[in-house]
Length: 206
Image 1: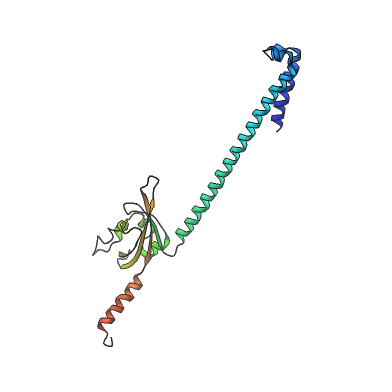
Image 2 (image 1 turned 90 degrees about the horizontal axis):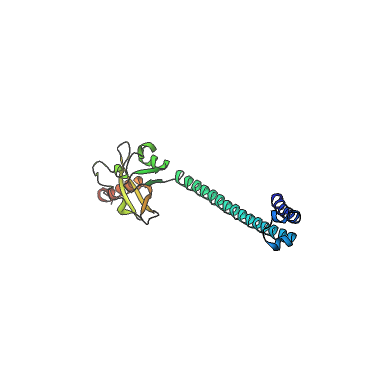
């Protein structure tokens, strides 16, 4: 406030005094020369109005900066929650590009498949297909938004079963940017079903 008050006071005093001592050095019209203090006050009021506009603009900029900071903090918090939910999820989760390449994986998916994070990031989801059915996972994108059970090959060569769900994430241009994929290992359930089916057909009591 001190600079604003100094500016207003300086214009008022300077224009008033100089208008009395040497009017033509300050004003260039007869009305101001005849009434220097009146026009000094008018000029001071214009300066005061400019100060008010400056304060309002300053306040609006501060509010906009504060809103931006709040939005930034919310984004960081949201990203932190997503990162925690992604990394610490009890099931396998991956971000998959449109061509099937893994762009991000969590620890559970590494445990399920037996591959390290670095290895998975060099692979595509199709690369997890069993050797006896190399095209087994080629239709992964066609199953988007639905749950599908598929066999997959672990890093040690063993074949397991997984329940996959691929959720497409839209892009800004109304297309697709990537998929969020969830993978639940159902190998034990499948083994139990196979054993039950075998006993149903081979157990003498049955």
